[in-house]
Amino acid sequence: MAAGEGGAAGAASYEEPSGEVLGRAAEAFGLLAAPARLHIVWLLAHGERDVSALAEQVGGALPAVSQHLSKLKLAGLVRSRREGRRQVYYVDDPGVVAVVRLMIGQLAEQERAQEDGQVHERGARSLRRLHGTGA
Image (cartoon, rainbow, N blue to C red; front, side):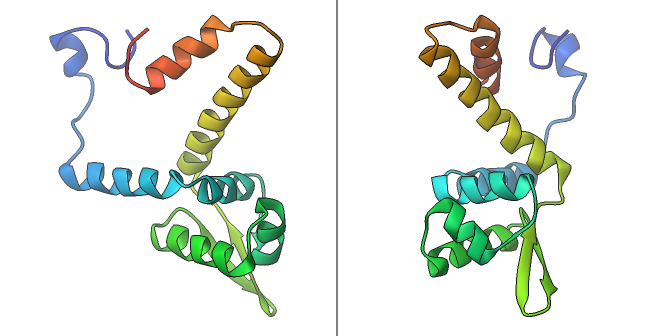
């Protein structure tokens, strides 16, 4: 039985998150709601980069990308370390990497399918599950 299906039996199979956990999750998703920050996390999920490389790839101004990185770092979504005179940023939380890759990969697959004139029902079902609308 999939998560979220079933009545009382399904309800007993998971623990309800605390209000604090839900609040922190909402803050993290809120930070990822900005396309530039999501792009930064997606890039960092694929490898370390410094702020200059990120600014070039994201197409943003260096100060703006630096501010995005500061917010992501404060939220614990990205980390950094010093390499000589530069800061190198990375994502080391496999959960963050998985969520970002899943969502972007799913939407990119749907976009490709639409461009090819095909409908991937499996992909649509997965996205509906992500939205919590069932099968």
